[in-house]
Amino acid sequence: MTSAGCTETAQTAQSMTNYILQSRAGSTTDKYSGYFKTFERFCDSKCLSSSPAKAMTVALFVTKLLDENKSYSVISANVYAIKWKHSIYGWVDPTTDSIVKHLTEAAKRLRSKPAVKKDVIDASILIDLCTRFEHDSSLSIVRDLAMILLCFAGFLRFNELSKLLCSDVQFNNDHLVLKIRSSKTDVYREGSEVIIAKGTTVACPYSMLVRYMQIAGLEVTSDQFLFRPLYSSKGKCSLISKNKQISYTRARECILSKLSLVAPGLKFSLFACHRSNSGCER
Image 1 (tube, one colour):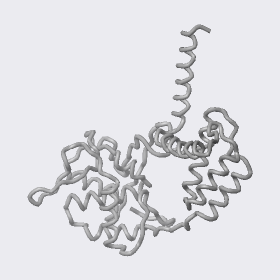
Image 2 (spheres, helix red, strand yellow):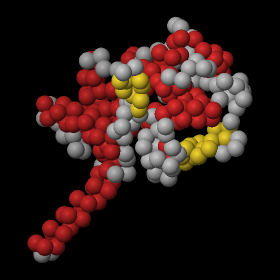
Image 3 (spheres, one colour):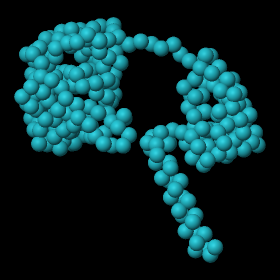
């Protein structure tokens, strides 16, 4: 083969590797690459091969993590990163060895933390909250209530809520439709729609969203983010002019502060809000 042919083959091989890496989300690839680098450093310090690795090498690595009191989530992520790397290059997977499996199971027993159950948000809590602010026209209050009700009614994750544009909202006579452009569960970016029925109580997400958009001066034809940060000037609260979505930290802070007014002491999971199994009219 000529030198030009060798160069072309090498470039094609590199392209193939890049495509394979894109079979996972970029954040996932970065995560596993980082964990595998930790494994590589361990192997280098012990003069052992990491690419490919032997089962006993992985077993020694997991033992080291156990000795360092690493959590089960960290240990399992490291093991999966090794599996992931070997699958990409077609190497024999050392993590399927019985010793590695037993050590991983030991990590699950010894290092797992007990699950902390969160409290349930039900319709009565939201009705109490909305009743408290039924006649309040403060933009900050109504915005937060709209976020809470949409998350509750649509089972929305934060990234779905924060990325909503005004033009992603469609109001119909008895329901509204939210266009979800991207989601953690939408790995192929096909998009989806969430339909939320119009209710009759004070905690109706349809009515609250209409109320919020009217106070904020938002139009459904706008391509600006639906939920943006606020600024206050001379006692007046408004959305910032910059088209910037609200941050997770601020949204969480706002939502929890409102829920604590009617359910003090309860611990809620955000996002999406936990709901009771009983049906409710919103």
